[in-house]
Image 1: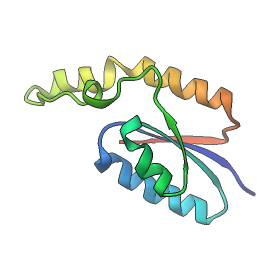
Image 2: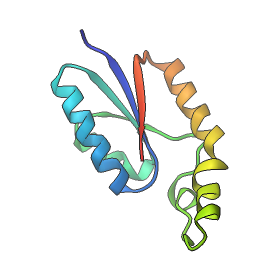
Image 3: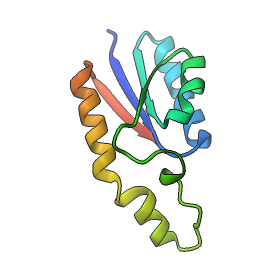
Length: 107
């Protein structure tokens, strides 16, 4: 049986690379893969042979990657907790747009 996966990545290529490794393995096992990520990652995702979906509401680029990481609590607030509802809304919209049997987030 084949499943439709939505794999979501936020952050840098360091986050995306392991997610694409999982995507390749799932694809080899006959599953359909879409990857939701920062628009800057489109080329890497498409070069790997997967459909790309950009974040629409969630922060991207520099807005998604606070430069100052000296205060871990503040970094997590800016990068994870404050935009969480925006990431969730984008994922919810994508699940509504295309059939999705399973989704997971790699970070």
